Amino acid sequence: MNPLLQLSCPLLLASQSPRRRALLDRIDVPFEAEGSPADETLETPGTPAEAVRTLARRKAHPVATDRPSALVLAADTVVAHDGDILQKPDDSPHARAMLHRLQDTAHTVHTGLALMHAASGRTATAVESTGVALGPLSDTEIQAYVASGSPLDKAGGYGIQDHTAPFFVEGIEGDYYNVVGLPLHRLYCTLHESFADLLQSPSA
Image 1 (cartoon, rainbow, N blue to C red):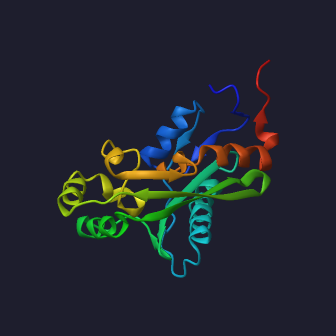
Image 2 (cartoon, one colour; image 1 turned 135 degrees about the vertical axis):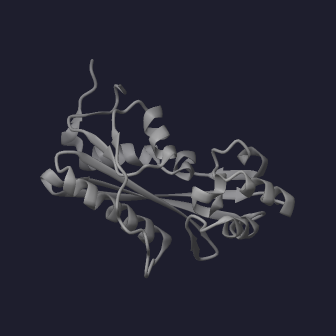
Image 3 (cartoon, helix red, strand yellow; image 1 turned 180 degrees about the horizontal axis):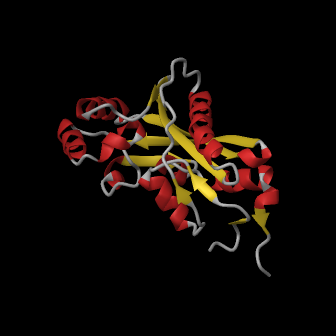
């Protein structure tokens, strides 16, 4: 158990994302995971920051309603490029189109967090944004990456944690974990700012 982050109530991740689960495992914080039934369709997305904040809150709400004594954590990630919001690709052709668009350019990854504790009627949200630059990619490289299946469940059609990422991620400005899907520093700060009473003091 992480001596710096111990909760007095259950932490419930409203997601089945293997990447978010792996990041929470990495920091050694006990949690349960439960997928959210929330609709992730955005009729009027607004800015990328508004979109991820809205979706994170929407994901958290039904899970928190079912488990009011738990602190529910939900997150949503999008890629923003030239004013457009890119979520997960619909299929392989869509993933190829996204990668063609993003290659040899810079974009921004936005992740919204929502922490909801229904028993006390509290919700806190936060947004983290990270700049990423991709190098040039040939049609053959894009085709091979999409054929691996990895891009299909990731915003923008790529995963910075993939074993192929070092070949085409040219640079990053900001929180690496945010690009993976869960900004751990922002999460830690939000917990201390809004739910300090649910945190246990580290052992001496």
